[in-house]
Image (cartoon, rainbow, N blue to C red; front, side, top):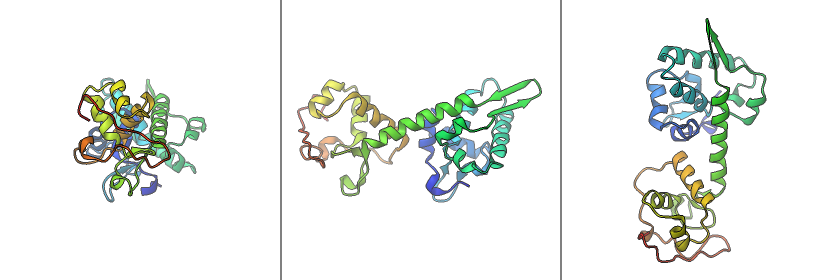
Length: 226
């Protein structure tokens, strides 16, 4: 059974499925998702398993009708609900890849299998988990604004800077600890954990000298006004 503690946001599922959070919410609005896959309390929350189904649903929209795609999702969910380890499948644990379960649905002359969608969703979920290791939300640091671990530098500002055209070299001139992996972690994190409102400019935040850890990052002059 899905619980709030084991559920994730629409944005998180959307990243795992490589679609938009609007797409994920549309699955609920159009009655595509079985009730076992989402919660309505305190805003919509979803089972990570939803990502595999969403990936299948949107990738096959040119080949299969809406009703056929919906039926595949409902049939597989019903099959999973009969398993004692249904919770592990809802959470999309890595063990599901090796579980004795047939991700295929057979209808007349058509066979649909979701193995690849499940594997892709798991890989993208792992990427989110990796990004979360280098980013923290601490109430005592900028009121919980997501920052690179050990710093007061909000990840959203680095993402905004790269989208505005800032190069890695320019960012490293201002923040030497940054590297390509951390910048990609920031992109992944912001996609999976979007926050409401427009982020403030870095110049408006004390993101400069002091770090939470023992390391020191000095803010330099950035040519793009970060």
